[in-house]
Image (cartoon, rainbow, N blue to C red; front, top):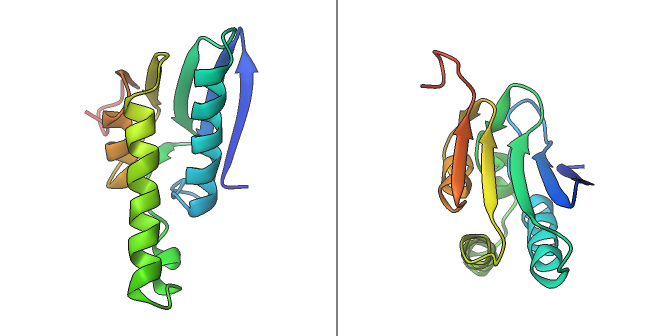
Length: 127
């Protein structure tokens, strides 16, 4: 699975979990979209923490996805959906924290910037 999530003390912990770099796929975006909706709609949920599995927060979009597009329309639909999820993350009614546990590049960094707060591991390679 491209992501996993669980709820601890009424906070959703959403982990990117795809390959070594935790790349972002449509499955990841759909899962994040569902989690944001759930947090916005369930009063007992207090917020979201985004993090990565392993040593990376996220290396961004899954490049293999882009080689599989068959038309310009598919590409535009993908980026429109990604934009919708980012806006929903940015306007989430509850706090969203990016717990940046490793490298965050490309879309990984963009996702972290859409969060209310960013906490970064104390590592000389990440600074």
